Length: 344
Ligand code: MRU
Image 1 (tube, rainbow, N blue to C red):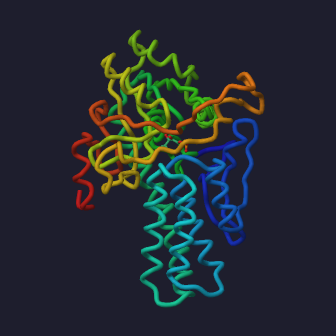
Image 2 (image 1 turned 90 degrees about the horizontal axis):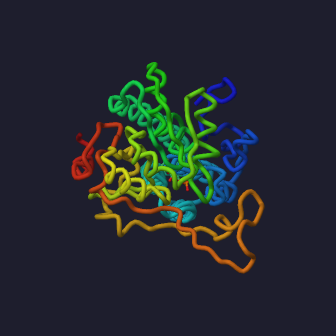
């Protein structure tokens, strides 16, 4: 992604530390944070310094690699408990599980600690590179769905910030824009944490992509008026039957899209698909602190004695999803099982 004219990834590692953009400060401040050990890495995920399923996955991969490289002695059991430690940070995003397992499997093939340490770093770098490539491909394939002049509605941030680069829904937007299509993105603000207004709008501004922020509850109005051509969101976990968990409010956008004959697509890498999860009802949904609903940018907006509930994600049933844009093609929800074998 281009930030202030320079290319960036969302997360990377150098000799000193794991580096990431602090997303809690955007759009006001652009700051890179350095994470020096597994506690700092876990905190960065929990506090949403880094967020978005593929980005959390890459951070988990780097986090495990860094933690293993800092061991003086240790065996696979110890590495397994580090894996579980990272796994507990955010429960819904399946990419985290996928990334930790990928790195762990590479480590497990080695006989001694120095070889494990080398393998871990190599596996984390390869994981991040593959993740970038998957998103680039999603953008290319999804672009076929976008006509010149299209108005695209998106929810939350499924952009480069939510991945290692390019994004998923925003990879499609980027490619359409780079090809010279005159597109406009309607950006749901995405309460309670405002990932749309703060992050998606910032990413699109950085690359001068035309966009308009709308209140979450305005999406139905514009769909009913026929102003939206297509809805594209990301996903945090997709079950084997095509049900998809994504940011709270996605489900209602999909239902509204169906009611107004607007095609609703999910853009996600295969690393987001949990083939062992039969359907959406088995996807764990994170409930976050009520303060995210009651307080905006440090200011309480509700009466002092009011309480709140704050589910971070909801499930869109497969029947509302026109297609899932992956790096291997665009599939009907019922077809994604075919991807489990890795032979497609
Ligand atoms: O709570 P967040 O900000 O991590 O939620 C992110 C989303 O819901 C994204 O849409 C999803 O992770 C897909 S990102 C390519």
